[in-house]
Amino acid sequence: MAGYTLKLSIYTITLKDGEKNDVPFSNLHKAIAGSNDMPKVELFSSVKDKFIHSFSERFVLNYNKTKGIAIKQINTIPTMNIIDGMMIGGLTGIEQEVYKTSSSEEKQDTITEDEVTALPYYFKIWMPYDSNVGIIMIQSYTETGVVSLVMDKIKHFIRSYNFFILSNPFVDEEYKERFKKYSIVDQLVLAKTHLSSEARGALNKSFADFEGLKVEIKLSGFNISIDEFWHQINAQKPLDIDLSEFEMRERENYDVIATYKDISGKQSKARLSKNLDILPTIILDSTLKEQGKEYPNYEKIQTYTNTILTKVKQEIGYEANEVE
Image 1 (cartoon, rainbow, N blue to C red):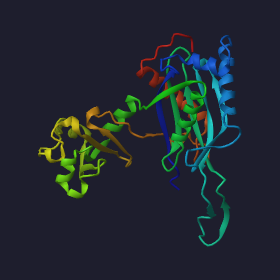
Image 2 (image 1 turned 90 degrees about the horizontal axis):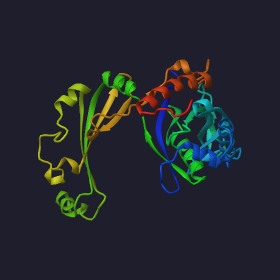
Image 3 (image 1 turned 60 degrees about the vertical axis):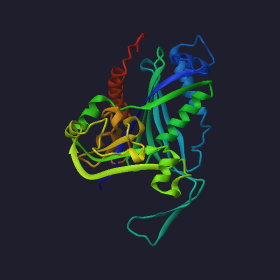
Image 4 (image 1 turned 45 degrees about the vertical axis):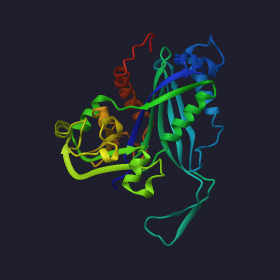
């Protein structure tokens, strides 16, 4: 049995107050705790308790009520500015029938619309006391995940105290370089939106009134090493043909997106304008799984993500002004 593959999503986050000013996470902690003179250990404990309470011992659902998450385990490491733990979550809102894989004839059970088919997911939130830049890590599976729902829940919790965070996906340089070394480019897409009515009508009169018309030129059926691809492709004019009929004469008027594939078949995409700033899927080693199970072992994944956090802090230029 091949089993499930564990993934990790990393986001850098920037904290701002209600006036959209950059503020350190200590401000958020004090607002959540309702105290300005509480010791740091107690502040983190208060943030943890308030976060747990925000779930109301229920599953938090996404906007269309197809997925739900709940807290299973949560811990704090104040000396490292970390809150982490395990959530459970999965599909809901649809009736599902349960069968054994050995027989499609005999139904074993029925999962109703108000039940959740839940898997465990690890999460880590790093909120440095002396900075407005933090990190969120969320584990998922290649076949399923609740990453966006966990992110939405964290953002909503912070907004409830009149703060908000901006988030961006992040992959450390070492992982990106390893991905590039063993990957190829196998697709290139030139995409143009917002064509003028004249250009839309020139393609076909029936398109003239559709302001959202999008043109994509896709090239596939090739595979080139990443280094060779970037050596041969002109970022300013990737194709040696006239694209003016699509209003794509100037490079800044359209997107160019390359698809990369590693030796295991995992894909990532990046815009040419970002000069190969690809964000490959971070695959976690199967040794991080619970013995005999397909989900992660909390202690193992906590230790592993702590090492990743150290790399990320270096790459974003974080220098502690306090003893962690």
